[in-house]
Amino acid sequence: MHEKSFRGFKANRPLFKVQIKRKPGQCRPAKARCMEGSCSHTSGYTKEKSTKTFMAKLGPIKIPSPPNTLLRKIEEEKLKLQSESSAEKGSLWDSPISWDSEEILFSIANDVLDNIYKKPARKGASTKPLNSFMAFRAYNSQFGYGLKQNILSPLLASAWHSHPEQQEIWDTFAQQFNFVKPKCGFVEWVDQRYERES
Image (cartoon, rainbow, N blue to C red; front, side, top):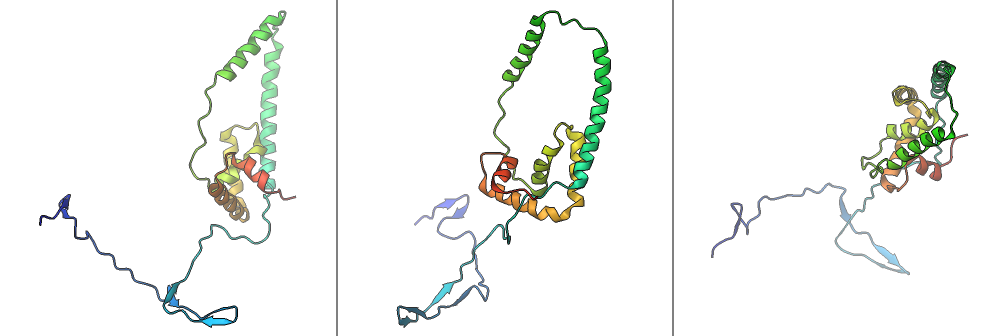
């Protein structure tokens, strides 16, 4: 009888052999079971069941307050930005501009609104899993609203490294967010699920 082959290998023979070595604690003899007064002993072995958990935490978890150093540095940067913008505004508004016609104002407003509505819809959220620093950065970025990313990112990075006690909490939040995969963003999800430290 002709043996079938698949890419040069004979189909009725295994390509490789696997030998499983059992660890000493993996299997154990079954113990006697007692049910409603009658005891019976089952022969053979039973496998131990193991469970995998992604997080174990005692006590309630709260969203950590943003580090005071971070808030102070953000305020300093905002003050710098305000002083720079006020100097620019003074020079802009010193020149005479005639706003005689309301039509000019309405045309500018319509152009701005048209540009807003013509922007392409944002594609689906990234499928990249969230890590602890990304969770910390996403949540604490809201306190730096109005600052440019190139100013805010170094402030968040230095706050992350200067407060290692918060890193485990943000890691827990990131793991849970990745496990749940909610349809909302991380900040909204964590605010709905946990309360803030006071």
